[in-house]
Amino acid sequence: MKFTLSIAMNPLDQLGELARAAEEAGFASIALPDSLFYAETVSTDYPYTPDGSRFWTADTPWVDPLVATAAMGAVTSRIEFYTSVLKLGSRNPVLLARQVGSASVLTGGRFGLGLGVGWLPQEFEYCGVPFERRGKRVDEAIDVLRLILDGGMVEYHGEFYDFDKLQMSPAPPKRVPFYIGGHTDVALRRAARVADGWSSAMMKLEELRETIARLKELLAERGRADDPFEYQAVCIDKFGLDGYREQAEAGVTDVITMPWVFDGVGFDAPVEPKLESIHKFGAEIIDKFGE
Image 1 (cartoon, rainbow, N blue to C red):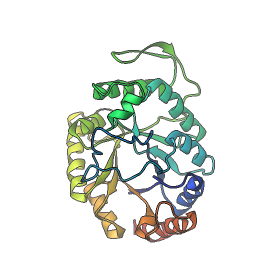
Image 2 (cartoon, one colour; image 1 turned 90 degrees about the horizontal axis):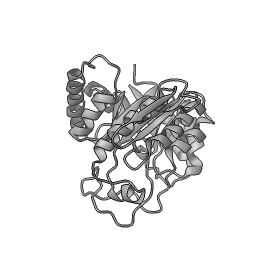
Image 3 (tube, rainbow, N blue to C red; image 1 turned 60 degrees about the vertical axis):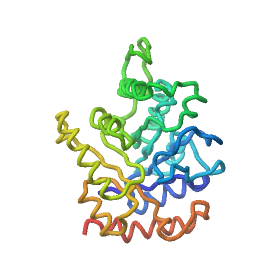
Image 4 (tube, rainbow, N blue to C red; image 1 turned 135 degrees about the vertical axis):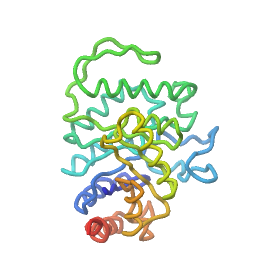
């Protein structure tokens, strides 16, 4: 089991200190959320809360996850970073490949790309991308990203993206892992087809157990049953040593968490109590988990 620190919705001037503390406490990685903007009016419900409401406001701080990776990578040496998850549907994959490659190079290969389609039609519309056929477009975009990031002179001729030979240098120092987010069967099939892992939004343990079992079925169908595959989880009903061991038994390989939440520390609190919570979590959970 690995443990990942989520830095979602924290003041941006705290990110460097949070990253250093997480590295010192034994966290394996940092999960970076993605939000392009807050639309005052939305045409569909947020899919990961019971009532469809967003749990952040127009004033909640966000940062581009690729920029945050470079900033936190500069003040750390071991801890890894991945997006959880970046909304690919509204982005151009050629431009994104340059950003991802840069993040990987600047961190010495400590970057993984968590990807989702995106749930909000306004994000597509305001970025000049049709919401319709978004799944097919994302599938092509993933192919484009992998092709460019693997290095060398490449070309691509698809339905949505078309370019002649090009090369981005330097290439990432090692292969950038892709993690697919989403709870639908389409998303799970996409993860089994092209990804190195799957990333959950907020789920209960039994939902995680069922989803992981389904993913293993899909991987087996594709002859990937023995391939390394990460199951990154935001579990909302099992915590503490026993709870994390239950998650591991269910197949979770990477717990995404915010230790200060368990200590009653809010997102907008000063950084000091968050640092204390991170180090306490390292001593009481990460260090003891394998005992």
